[in-house]
Length: 201
Image (cartoon, rainbow, N blue to C red; front, side, top):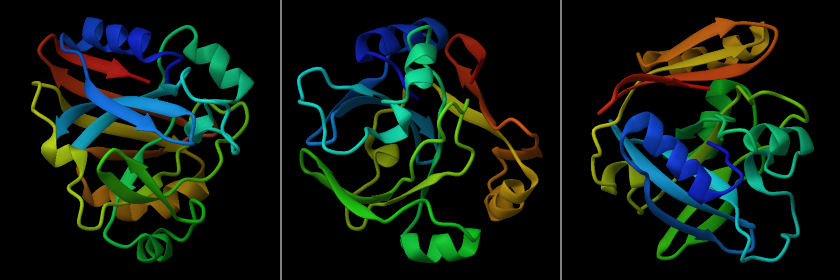
């Protein structure tokens, strides 16, 4: 979930969910930092924002955080911009879904190290319906190490073009993922929280 600042983004989630996300950390040389919230089943929500204490990175920030239209939208409130698939082998997952989310690269945050494949964000898009991919290797995914906060992801609606829905069909084995063909890509998530049923987009 993209936001213009972690403080404002955390306050927004606390108001909606009744709990604040846990501390994350800084992505060195990437120009971003994050906070994380467990969602059950090894899944977690990442709240990510530009890090004002880092210099401008050499490459665009992840998740379109440098896109002018997205920056204007997240200045109003945080937005769901993309989802990630956890896999044991990024290249095999790319073959299964018949697309590439970009060249895998290694990232680090503190003692954590992982491989990530994350393509550029479509300029002016409401969301990128094609997921990035994460390969944790011997590192435990934060989805399994974060403390439970009583927030559970119950449904992720992925609205995308016909070709993208076809590519994503293998993910529908996860009953939380609901695919629907639509000209304008969108992501809509439903949660059960300490404050009841909450929808975010």
